[in-house]
Image 1 (tube, helix red, strand yellow):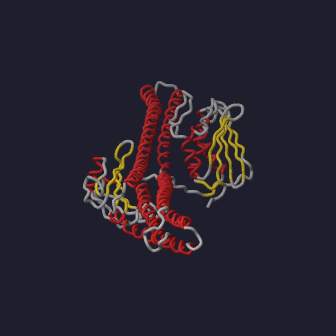
Image 2: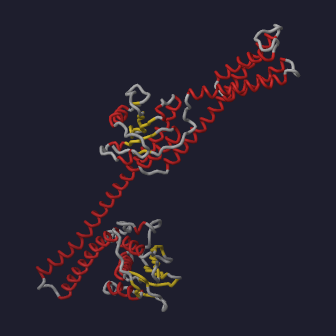
Image 3: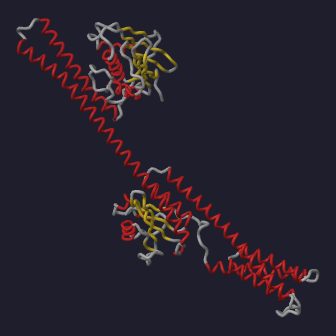
Length: 512
């Protein structure tokens, strides 16, 4: 069983003192205070009436009530009356009295002493309770604040154990539901604070029954440790093992506070489990969406060129000798075009897969005009009926790039411009030199980018809303991945007068 244990901490304000030590301490305080009051009263006896000397002993009763328990202050009240009679009322050094009017003084003095001691003790208890509430509130706030910042079950268990030890003392072990499934314990982690390995049988019993077991409970009370179930809103999430300090039982107040600690820990563990389930579900939805998009796009875009190639090839095979040379040439061009489109489709799929795993760039200093020229030559036949203009400054610097991958970016952008703009409309390429950057723009006069989709068009399998346009929606995603690998940026926006502009900013020199 895999466990997580916090570190042993110093004594906290909630840890109880030994009863015997408390009795000895309060007895010593009472003796010192009554002795001091008697010495002061003897010094004032020649100058003050006996009734006034009673105030000295009442002051002593208040001091004892402030420092000691209720029963000790009551005892001090009776002791003050006896001491007052013995030392301050004639006959001195005897418990008898010459004037029975002193009986009224003794009665009033005892009543006042009891009232003062009781009220003082009550006020002190209320103050201590307020301090205790503040300590508990601060402990819960500290626990909640630290647990909120954790995103793993193990970290939640470790932080909760540390906070519990700092608050209650003793040793704490927290076993989450996931960890409980592991039957091979890690001895190094389980003994981090010197506490023994929790009893697997008691952990399992507390988890199955949802009740406390072990030390101080009705179930398995002979066990040295206490096992508190961690119950979340959706069920059991783990068990908290507690080894009380010095083997003491936890009183009812501390037990209630411990259960609050356990509830906070359970909610934190359950929150992490819910987040993990939500993330897993989101990933599954995204994977399913991507799979559906891929199958839909590939099934359509594979079938279309294959059907065209098959039809043209069948026509040439059956009627090749009967067809005119112009018709045969058109069929051959159709086969070549569709085969090239099919090759680009498969290439885009392979490129996207390779780029997602982290491309290995072979970067050198290359002239920008050579890379653009190679991309234009790739579509020399397709661009015969378009006016293509290039505007490159004479002083355009070379770019530090992978020539093949960067060329693929401009090939995809040119293909995108031809795909989403009418036949015969112009395509423009321009470059601008900035500080340590070269900005390249590819502009067309097509339908432009739908409002709000300036960023979405770079997502995988996102396609424009043109019904007669073919493609799987990978070209711009590949462009973004390649540009980002070159530590550059790519943006898209609509141009005045209609059309779209794709702007790429690349470093003009090697970046460290």
